[in-house]
Image (cartoon, rainbow, N blue to C red; front, side, top):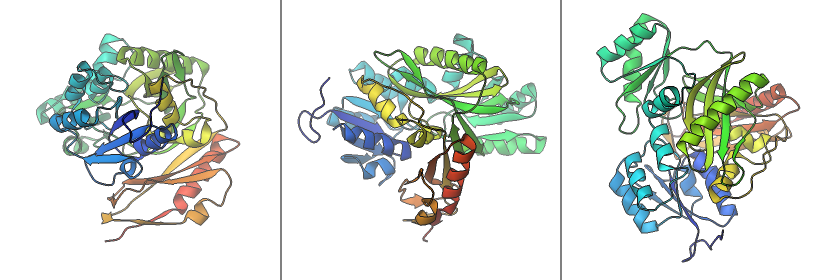
Length: 394
């Protein structure tokens, strides 16, 4: 393959749809290889827009706006980074000859929990939790009754745990319905109601489909969520060889069915040797930010290399961990303190995302760390993140 010159007639160009913190790291990796990046999002000065060559601000769910930009820019690769996109338009653009990463089918199915759950459970026969779909309150209450409490309630289209809750008591049932509806993204109006799995832990298995090396796997990543949103992760997650093999087989089956090249964040519940498939994202995963410390190649470099068809060599450098820090209130142009304290230990790094506004519980940055053990890495990352202070200006 050939790489052109950015901002020239022969540039190798990526159109990034969604410009959050994951897109920012991907953009930096792309620029290191001389790729021109055009970053698109629904608000101005999103993290990846701050480092891209150019950017656009559009309604990401408006297919006509996406089409206009695609035909204006004529990118070599269209790389979705978020869920709230008109995926039907991406399928159309793929048919018209544009390269959607990893594939139009993958983006369409994985950004809709109905599609991916039916693919995994009904077409591929993978082990999943029991589930129902519902649009109305009556359908939802019937689903909860059939599955029995506790249940997990999610919008069929959302990201980073938005709208997700665990319903344990009857008085929580109706509130969870409206919370999920209010936090849905895109065009999906339905909810998925899932049987609650009594698991030991949950993992993200970063799974890489490559052109010349088959399917590759990163060591499993453990993670902790708060109200459905990732707060910390660590690598490797200790698990049995039997469970890991099952997870790898499931991940390969799902990603083979989705097709294309790139990294997929496959999520599983694990209890002993039993593994349940949960979800898959066709792009770098937020829990995978730990790979910026733990691996020789971060998930962002791996994704880029897989897209370009370049060799990939995955090695675990040492146990690693990530720990996020968040905003508390609504504000504009926040400031940050505590870097001296956060970085005083060796093998600790802080990434401030640079988001232009804050809101309660919004993820504003992450600390990543290495350690002799996972426990040491987690403690270091936690101390560093807790040293960071987000100053929210009114």
